[in-house]
Image 1 (spheres, rainbow, N blue to C red):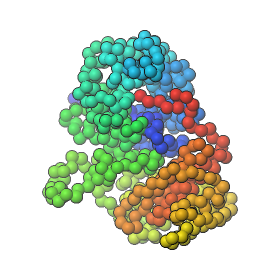
Image 2: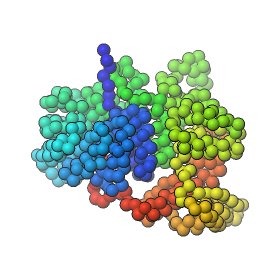
Image 3: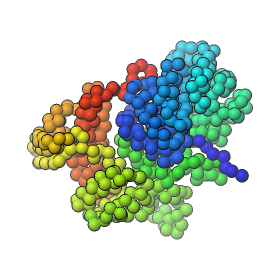
Image 4: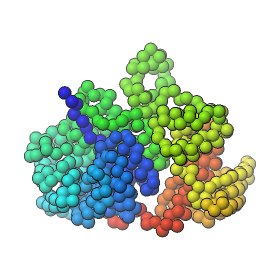
Length: 522
């Protein structure tokens, strides 16, 4: 008898990107969408097209790429939003329109200022319009977990009758608890006519740390689609973590008797990619993909592991894409060994990207004795930042001593092979380097955040630097990796400067929208 399958609906590019500091460029969104397709998610919620021209463009580009999963866009219950979503997603071979409206008493009274009947009428009208444009329509009653059960059943019944093919029940503010949420789904299954003809979905936030537990409770109660994000990123405390809920279903398959179509060996590389792009580092003790998830230090644990891995590991590292070999490469390692290691780590690069990454690997191997998996991952994840335009860092000279200002001299090479050299002083080597880069390029930035993360082990480990800056009222983020933290920081800062200059040259429209549309949550 075939095992029933749970759909995985990934909203990293929509709800996940709404987390402060997690905004992505179009190129970065396409990289994440491709990784999600390789992970084999069922649905990619690519964005909220009406929020801004940038959001519309990114959703449209992902739809046109046709990576494979259903491409979905979010809309409020109005014609303008719905038509915008359809225009953005229609190029995808499989596409979905997702409409939502708040239903809880607190939202009705204080946000919408609408009566119960008005909300149902709005939902029905929106779903009917969406069905005229698209066969696949999802409906979400926002803040469902705080909505009166009888009224929620009434709204869901009306949505199904209007033509919704998926009904999502969100715990928008992370308020519910597993037993309560399980009963909510069972109540809907019992009291809503036609509910067995649609896919019931769940979308949980993690404000009380129960997003994964609540999602699994909803599955026990009848949900067959889980909405989640990579690394659990999202509004406030985040969303249900995709890697956690997927591995819970897989590891406890005898209990749930359900499965997903996820290629779990892609979980770790996808997690690392999203972490690198968003600058949201994964905590060491994070379940499934954290550095400590498969580490054992206590003597009794180590003894048990030596006898049999299952004594203290309920999953194998390889099942989530983590290699245990940590094969060490060096300066004598060739392109073939490097390419094999990249593949074993779960990354797929085209020839051009492989060549660029291999060149950086060789440079790194000349500077440190051993190159570990983490070093290679850092190179791969920063391969986009190795592009020259419009400025490339040719050299950086820094002088610093106790009790004196540091000085830095940078030499940059432009796209026309023109060189610019500038020097500056600052109260430390990082400050001096950043000021020299600003003087050389004519771009003034305000540093908001400087984060350093070790890519591997040892005194000569690469440092991954993420900088967040403000320029003309907009936030930009850059990444750099190097065994020299000052140089890694300079590369990250120059990446931001290049983004500012490219945006200025293309007269790009700011991605943040105006009004409520710029910020939607379910």
